[in-house]
Length: 198
Image 1: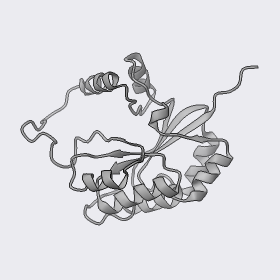
Image 2: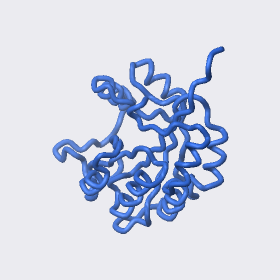
Image 3: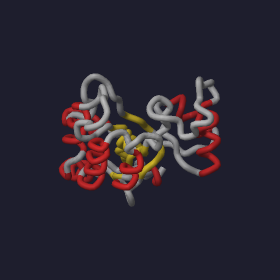
Image 4: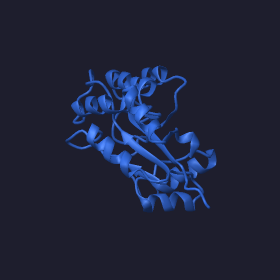
């Protein structure tokens, strides 16, 4: 009898480097809670601090075209064309690194170009906190076999930047940053992994 694929879960915190309080919250959620990786915004004033705090943890790059100064000040982009995904996949393919797929179409495109990605994606950042205790329970009950990414935005209230997603980060930190969250997932037979396992 063929065994079912295991349920593997990446809980990835976006926006490392955005604000010192967000940095602290993300790293706290990684060290104490269920968050398994983070994405670093490299061109912001608090990026170096975020990278230093997350030293030794699983950290990827957060493609950032909307905040901060361009990394290369001599060539700031003024527009994007549809080739952005193509350039991203080419760079990821050459380096053998995975890329987040937001939906089935993107997943198909990435895999067709030889880029590793997850089987499923869950997450959003809107007016209300996304990762509440209720949504955590619902998403765990619906978790499918294969590798899933839960995108999250935990953090303490921002101390240096204004963000429309501020108090919501505190709720996500309370949901995902506790040891009980990790324990609950492990008791459910979920294997917590980072993108290195994709």
